[in-house]
Length: 189
Image 1: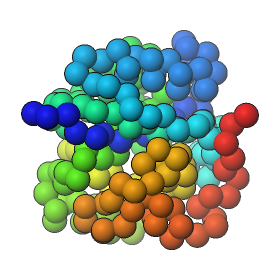
Image 2 (image 1 turned 90 degrees about the vertical axis):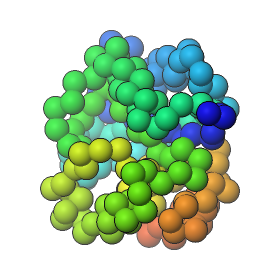
Image 3 (image 1 turned 60 degrees about the horizontal axis):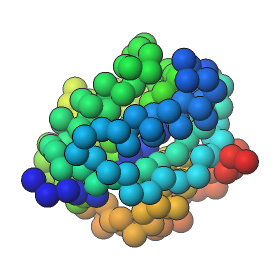
């Protein structure tokens, strides 16, 4: 398999064995850079962002990274989960506060597992988004187009990446967001 541009989202809002949330992102990026068969190409600035959903915990530090990877998305996600576990991540609940979170946002223009499944998860109502979690990897990440804390840092490193199902670039998706989706966000100093 040839290397494919892969987009990652990172976030933390609790201290961890690596230190502060910003320290956790730096440590995770270092571990990701050390993964065999993966080459980091770009990393966004770190962003201060309110917890999602509102009131669910302390504010986050978020960032995005682009990497070249030459393995199947499921195998890559397993290795990213291994990085999280090595840093002490325990999955305690949906949208829970955490010391590190690494999301696989997209692998090139791939759609996993298929277009109908991706479209269905992307179209969920806000109430169903909070209640349901997929039982398998879905790419592109089904909430990518809705989240300022993903799109603002992603626009710094991959503004022209185009969602294979919507045909919208990262820059266009960011411009489409309501102001409320970016409220309280700011680049970290």
